[in-house]
Image (cartoon, rainbow, N blue to C red; front, side):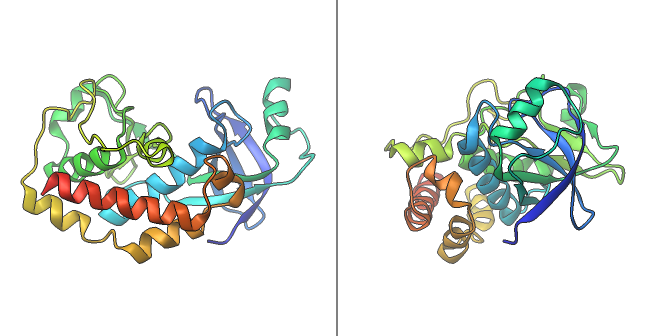
Length: 240
């Protein structure tokens, strides 16, 4: 995956543990950038990078991810002194997510009317990735201007932490607070959705992860790829 260089920071978003901000790259593309120097650190960026690519591969609509390079001593452009300090700590690779202009958050009273196929795919993805941050009060879903529903904010998923710590056996139950915790999906449909997660794909997403992020979990790219393969296989067996 080609790294894109950040040329401008346009604005800071008011909330988010990863200090998200809107940036423009040297090629004129707009991204929401999440910072390695913010509280959760590079481990959270690696989690969202992997989670987003896995979710997209399964078929869930998520913002595309890129690696954004932030130069050392990047000049102050927007935000507070505290935000600038976070920028200075974030020199190197950061996470970029496709910017969705004018997208609106899905409200809790809309959850019951979401497309069944979208919810079925979301259920598989969130069970696999162990997403603990999708409640009825805050579902982390957006509706774009064309009416499509997108899943966002995967940096709190637990799958990478469990792989890194080798916490066996893996538990794939959703937490009670997840708005799909009581939902179910026929096994055949689960198997069909998982068919795209082959070993070559999982090794590739590990290989394209920035070394600085891999260092945060103490894994090489090969070790991460092998860990992902074993984890997905465990999920297949649990869901069969």
